[in-house]
View 1 (tube, helix red, strand yellow):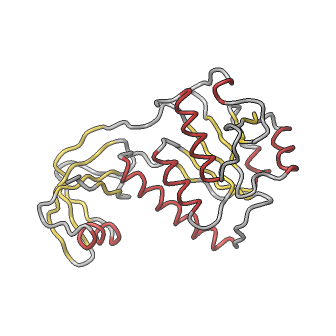
View 2 (cartoon, one colour):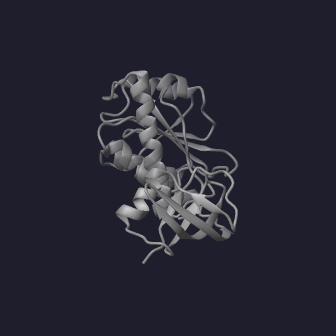
View 3 (cartoon, one colour):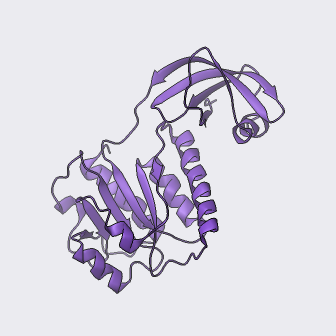
Length: 244
């Protein structure tokens, strides 16, 4: 049986100490996985280490773990891929975040575009970000990463463009360039990838992006859904310049 991996916000994990997990993590271990006292677990807090431990006590809504040993684990991509993703409806955004974490993305910025079908007020955007943060953490627990990708606030496209890094690519079905034809990139700079929502970027947005010297790239002759496009592009980037 695979040893469960659990994220904890505790900033100072030390071998030999006890860690009291929060209610959500405790319920997952005790009620969903039905672990018992003595079961092995791995904790991580984003500092680049895995902390092996055993469940010492299970109380109502709280599991306590005794940390036995630690080791540094680096499963990170050599590339800092930053995905600017046009916000999509339903669970499509969740899928993009989840699989993006598995593929090694280190930073996400949800962007509002003209064809964005999700319209929320500030309070509800905050709840969305909280939910997306949990999706990212859960994906890290599953895939073995122990450094949590950064999730930036929801941003308008025009504002996000001002944050560009210089190694920028946006997906456009009519582009003449493909990733394999671009040449080399620097691993010391972030690679930003811009993906539109359902329906893609509008013509005015495409013009705005082009004026910012962001390189348009195509992913072949077929039109891909937004959640497929982002994941396919990251896979190609990893294959051409990363650790695939």
